[in-house]
Length: 469
Image (tube, rainbow, N blue to C red):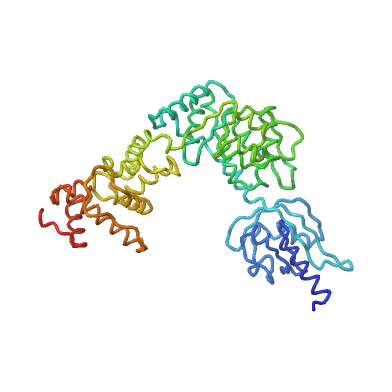
């Protein structure tokens, strides 16, 4: 049975650990006696690193007097809404906005309490964006594709360069939405202005408003005048990626900024005019996002003056091989290699695969395959990254309709370890290629895109007969 004091202590600990704000209490000597869960998250430390230790032995300040807890202990000062920057025991910079006050008993200071709000990420994001230079690299010449679907989207995008109307780009992850956004910017009269890009899904809700609209001196103690992304993009283009992940209240403020062409910094008394073209992207159907209340209807209508729907790669098969060639050329230059192309069976796999990751996934596949090559001229199935080799093995187990002779039978599905399955698949393709080449080892090595020595090693390793060579 708990005593009243034990019950109250239990309740206090439960409340302090559940609240979404940092709580740090020290006694009259500066020793930490309360350090809640949120504070451990803010400062990136475990409770045992702090509790029972002197504040100044754990944290580093520019000077002792920069600690708001120390000021509360030494001078009995109540400090409200003050920004404080300091370092934890790992040397990591922490920035918080604090309310700090002394705990008094009979006129004596017996401790101090600090309630902290984390603004570390906001400070870092603002600094990064202040230092960010215009690094757009894509134009419409960067667009690789011959399919009617992609050519139609490109034509609509080129027409949109003539105006400053808002644009909504809709497409699955990896389809190239930012490529289109940068191309529109670089093809427009705003090309000499800044291009600022921000992924809205990567931002904590509490930081978005300050990052978008900026802060004014006096918004909180220690706050300085800082422009937000709208002001940084003035005269240019602001790309807001995954716009549907923004909080609905912030969507309303964004709508106001777009309609009135003004923004108001947090803590400011007046509006600031802006001249910014908004390009927004999302990876789901906007009608679904509106109906499920992830996107405001009025914001959708404002953004979708021009709407571009980028088709997934599986719906534009004609673009797969030109894209693959482009990526081979790209990584030939980066890796100082001389890969010429793809073996037939790799081409067939690329054309039959569904590409859930779209163009980005295709690029990663080509890069991964070229990392597995030695001096072969063409990418073959053995060069594909592991996850794709298992897919090709599974396809080979289906009825064979490609017109190739099958010898011997492809590996059957089993519960064998993955390494064994991959080796069986490789062995199968070597045997099949040997038969196609009438057991001529040199010709088979060229067909497989590997050296004769490498093929001989594999024949010996798996005891594959080539007596007819």
